[in-house]
Image (cartoon, rainbow, N blue to C red; front, side):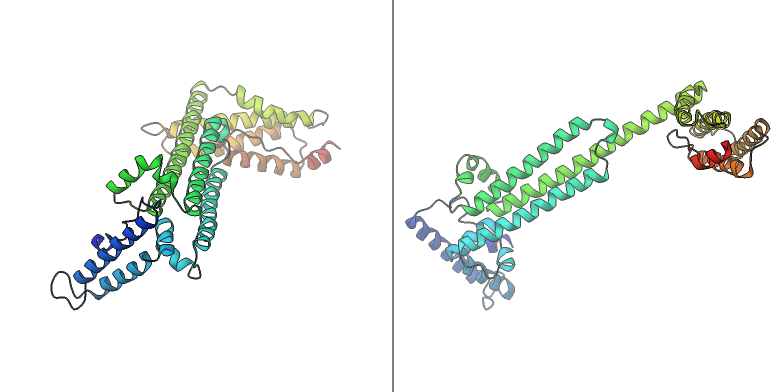
Length: 344
């Protein structure tokens, strides 16, 4: 099938030509087309003859390449643009349509990268944020350079950028891999760059999330082994500052101590479940429920005058803390209006 188009790339890398070279190029195209039409003519016996679709394809390619304007559009924009812009007749119309197309294409690429950035978090808790921001800036520069290069090739009649400095290595490498026209080169470069950007973004997210998980597990392991609740107590104690002037400060202090105890027990449970042979025979949740009921009874003993509303508030706060215990340490602040009613 490649032989059908062997005459369609004779102008690749030869756009800076004068009138005599233009005539020579058209002669080469005409000779190649005639030779292929003879080989694939439906009435020809043998040699792959009888394939009418190949013959029509050769005729269509020849009608495109013998027209200098269509050949200009084919070299830079590819055969799809004849379908996308059937009303285009001049080089200016093709170039204007192509510039709009590449702006939309690269805007979509930038939008996808920004969306991935937004969905995966803009700072990753500060881990490697500066390096990631620097790499994202470099990606935007790379896309901008690619877009400017495509636009330069599309707008200019000649292709000094490809035939000059880059032509020394770009065209030979492209010919080696069968890439002979600018639109093929830009298509390959765009696909490689976007695939590389997405792959590195995914690898970055995976590395950061894995690093955070390892740090969290190490911290939970240290807390479970030491049994130290000072950190949890310090975190929950911060919430008692807004209740200093309230008569229920003792109750709040009990809740803070209870919260620290629950966190320690839950983290110990999580550590036990990560051990190679388990850690308790599967009754850890029942133990935590019993612990919760015991704590509520202890609070009732210390505060015998608690109303039903306050008791329900305490229960809901502790149960919610129990459900969220495997997450980061937090304390569910009681409703201020209810506490004010109690103090009155």
